[in-house]
Image (cartoon, rainbow, N blue to C red):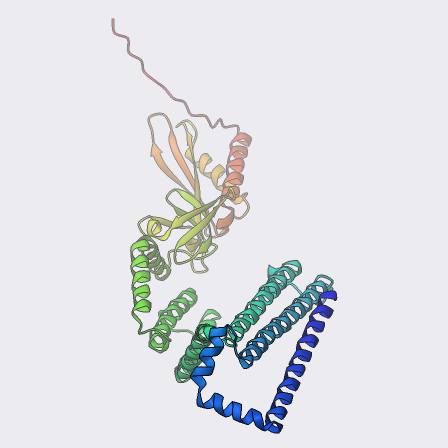
Length: 449
């Protein structure tokens, strides 16, 4: 506050000096009117200006009018500086008050930024961002005041007038160019807006048909429901790319060589560095329309068995029975054998066949082995009663026969657990029948003398 009073007193003092100088000028004017002898002297001065001026400079005396004019300009410059100092202090005071008020703002007034259940910024982070923006705005306003003040002060003095106009040009010429370009861009802006609106409603129409196909309300011959979402994404990308190509000539600076050079450079970098990515993208499209599996299916890829938890245009992720996540690039999947266990569990299918093999010597009747294996299959949970389990004899060795029990299940997600229960029931069945599951093995060793 003390500085403010000093500055106000300085401005009052400058204004008083201006008033005194104006009074002195008025007195001089009055004297020049009433004194006839002054008229003659002034006439002589007008007739011989060069002589008077030379004499004055020879004596080292500057005319009084120039002294007054220079003093006025200096005082005006000081007054402008003082006014700007007051204004800058006032602006900084206002921003300081806003920062203090922002620090004491209740959290109820500033909510966290949440987009689709994702907290992007907390309340504290938002307050920090606002403080930084206020600080930047404060410095921008201060610099703008200084940039305006300096040319004004330079324009008051003859030697720096040209410099003042140059400084003003640095600030005003870009603004003028931006304003003219903005006005000239208005017709193109309307064209771009119309194109964007049309694209928006075309995408909405495509999204509507996609939803209807996914829900089964709209059926197209030969078009599966799981094709709807990826097809929509492909059409969306193509439509957006087509829209960008149409809008490109209407963008400001699109015809400049710099803009075109940057576009070519980005295109070259993209084409050189994304060959593998584009290959995976194309492979993802092929896999999508091949339909070898869908989300949730139990599949085997390269000796890895698990459930498909993610399938996109770049990779496929499996979750194994041990809760391990395995990622396969689409290019690798396209060149690999894929076993899908879920296709056997569809409504029009009988189910997935699981099997187990046992061996018994020829002394055990095969009918007894068949009965025990079938009863063990019936006793296992999640094994279907229809179709019925069956036994195949897959091998007749020198010392034993190989029996294979086959049974159907549609609960492919629990195959490891079903196998465990089936093995337990087979062991219990042979134990209750008093049969030993170990098979005799013989080896002939010849001794040469």
